[in-house]
Length: 503
Ligand code: MN
Figure 1 (cartoon, rainbow, N blue to C red):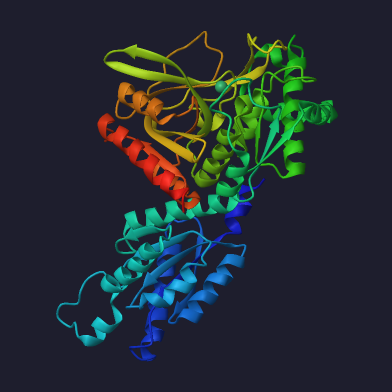
Figure 2: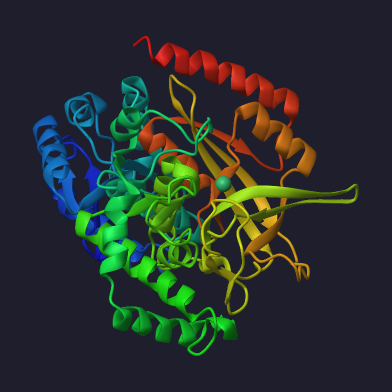
């Protein structure tokens, strides 16, 4: 799994629509202007994916041909479309109905300002985005085409940020089509929300979910040599502080060696099978000496998706979030809303898990230690402990409602950590928007899970874009959430998505 390579091998095509009405002389100007827009966008730090000016499209044949080429081009993750002039939209019908790549309609204009002193009919013939993009927008809406619309001058920071955000989601969308989740063991027995329709997940997102007996994994863990484990431990020593009992000569050193073997064993298994996400369950540890804690934390840090207790939906979504955040990640982790602080003036959630929180959200050097777990009946597991720095974040949960997937996204803020000397797990203290009572009421009405993807980098809007690409339901809980409106939204969505299944 190599997210950097994925970005390097991805590009976005930029196409400009026009027509033959204005004489061919205008085409060289359109090409020149389009290329300049692409150069400006490529020079923006906000856009991490290369944009290629692909072509000027002036008739239905060219448009259809372009869409076929995009569909079969492995490197093309999305198409940006812009109408410099009017481009009668019936000629887009054939192409748009065949488009399979994510689409972004950029409603911009080449010139920022009107040249009031010199404007003439030549200028009017060339600079027609204001009406050309509306004609194009109409046919997209008439056809029910899923797309993003970004409006504003292409030099604006906000416009470039929107394009950049979308480009990351487009890369993640390409990645999700090849995301494979390895499940070691099944679901935690009797748990409902972590279940779901794996066929539908593959149809909707491309996520492929494969089950393995934990014995298949044990072989890989046992095959890791002591020397390989020691090599990993050296890396741990360079990056984390380690409880002296776990170091060479300490009475728990064997446990750290075993945790390192778990990390390398799981990683080997995942890499050999092309898996970018995985789940474990403490109810099925046959042949493993301890529940993988440190191993899961380290593998999340490397970009793998993870879900505990067999939670494959959260595992896959976490990997998707890590792809979206790549290169700009302030922390993206598996999380659970664990327990509350309900002081009336300061209501917050303590987010944590038994062990498996990603150190990408750590605010200080993580401390590796060992503590008994209390459940699972195995040896005490090794884990990293740390706090999370204050800052804006998102909690996201993907659930299966039986007739559809729903993605629930809550804007939250990590708040100043507190000293928790007896709590031997990584954690975050967070305050959800608009307030804890409204947020949790809405979350529970929407059916949101206790497991989430917690991220300080992927935005609410990016999760919405991803949901739109997948054609699934998206529910947002933020500062503006009003519970009466929220209940109405849930009902309206029920009707909309119910009707979708009829057509
Ligand atoms: Mn859990």
